[in-house]
Length: 86
Image 1 (cartoon, one colour):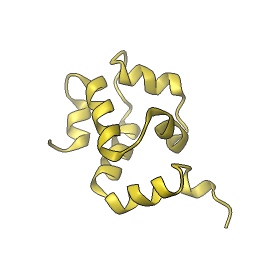
Image 2 (cartoon, helix red, strand yellow):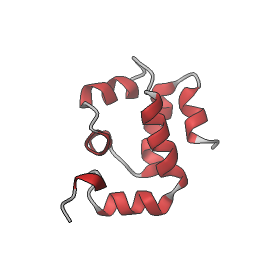
Image 3 (cartoon, helix red, strand yellow):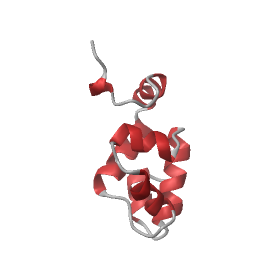
Image 4 (cartoon, one colour):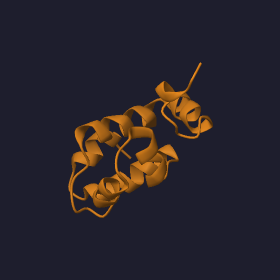
């Protein structure tokens, strides 16, 4: 499979969004929590009603390419790392 960011901009963005989430090991709910995106928005992307935003594509591309970062985020329950108290 090619670059996730490239794939998400291609035809069939909904399927590509779902595939990217799966590759990263993330559910739509976890993605929404991590990115502070509404669930309705992510669902709209997943169903292909609208295309994912550039920011969403970038987050998934970074997590896909940086497995250590994805693992750290997963271990943190996909809560944004910047929201944790020291």
